[in-house]
Length: 130
Image (cartoon, rainbow, N blue to C red; front, side, top):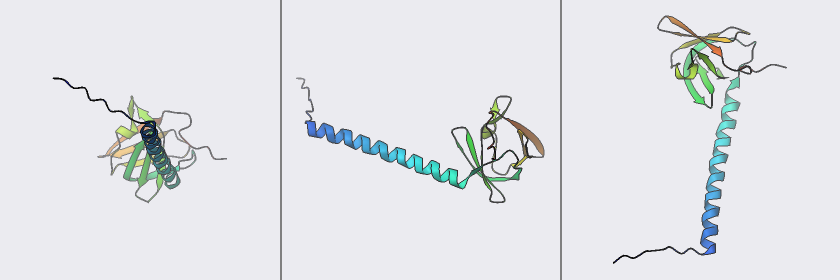
């Protein structure tokens, strides 16, 4: 003998469920916004005229942006760089040395006595100073 069990929800229950999902979505989006805001306050976007020279202590990748902490406690944002369809974010490791000369569109990564370079993938890879 088969019995079909149907759950009957009142309008009040449906409204409470919808409100619960809306509230949950707001909490998630707000948390993401706060994380984004805090990260952008901590890591500054590198300007074209600003050289980079240091050893990678820590890194985060998020939406095509690399957030690097270098040995001199410098916190920087670097946008998309690639070489032969390999993006820098999938290549770098802690302990790599990174160098970029002022106004250059290349970043050099040194690992195991070898030099690798990556080229800016987007025109707006660097912040333009006013």
